[in-house]
Length: 382
Ligand code: GLV
Image (cartoon, rainbow, N blue to C red; front, side, top):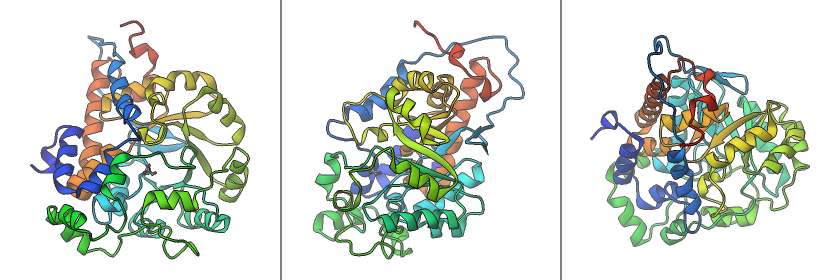
């Protein structure tokens, strides 16, 4: 089956499972501890019911919108994800190109395999950069400056990963980048020959934003050693100020899941917040993103843009988030599955599937413009 034959994100997920070595596929397909929040992110979308409307003119539909003042062909950005270049060789570069061609924002993670400069070298429009704050402030300042120098148009500051949630699959798989050459890892790779061939053709196999830039660091190939050695567990609201000052551009705060935190973010000078529980990868037992969205939208009113990340597996999910008042949404796993399944063409297919589902759903709800969606398109009591 080719990526063009995939009809759903679930199809792409199955294709990726067959193409990507287990440790990397499961890095994407995992949540913390029981994975309860990971599952709830998806399940709670199904509880939201759409109002079907009829005999409404459905011609001339538009999905175009804006996120933080940037025009987007649909309000769906590519989320920052770690190890992306391990789902497919040069993964971040390919996904950024697919997003650019599609007219949606691409967000590069600090924990990416391809570096800021790599992605810049293959794109012509600005992308967004996601920042983790390390204890080594010189390194962080330099990272911000590199993102600025690359022309990134937004900084996405992640707030919910000062320490790492435990993902059992990663520990059992011995996840690292580059992979270790134990018999188990060699077997996982040998059974994925196309992945290996692509990977042999690139030199990008470790954390490109870090290696060669950070000084005096130990074994950073695994995420847990990375975060426990390097991430700043003391990060606080007052740190946002120096980050914002150094950056000087559009700032998005990622990882707000509580109304009180949402209200606190109003004084931070940020342009948007992302309602997110890190895809269920941090605090297992936290509420799903979609269940918290309406009250967070109500808490900040129209003073700040609210975006949503977590659990989106279809264009219908995007529409539901927009109805609740999100100005934009993010897809993480859906694009990783597309990437693993078929590189750039796979990411393009992910975006096409989401766009088609969003468009058809919007039409059948009796709407023609994505900007007009509101809670009025949802049932309150069904
Ligand atoms: C890193 O951001 C992760 O969630 O693995």
